[in-house]
Length: 79
Length: 79
Image (tube, rainbow over all chains, first blue to last red; front, side, top):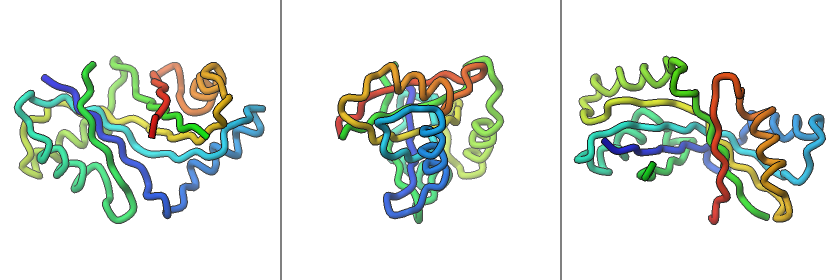
């Protein structure tokens, strides 16, 4: 059993109102030094060892991310 | 300017209906070999270089994650 992590983030040209709301809240919390926040989705998959990367890519492209507005990154988690 | 990534996931003992919905959809897509999915949140922060880790931890603990039901991991992104 292996763990695969898929991170989905909005493309840089897409407005991220959730991230902007967090930046606004930082000021009220008195936290400085953070200039931008982008929010995305994080998926942890428990997969069979023999599962190949192309299947994970197909899954991310069809189910986890909307490729019109989002990019995704896949990594094998050693943990 | 440095990039810090915060990943927030539900604690293992907390039920994750979103992840279960994805597992259910996998069968309909004909994808096999994926046994479990947990969904969380992914934040990419653009921070000043001199920002220390304790500030990011405080931010994650008060604003990004609900520590009652969620764990978070912080990493410096070299990209």
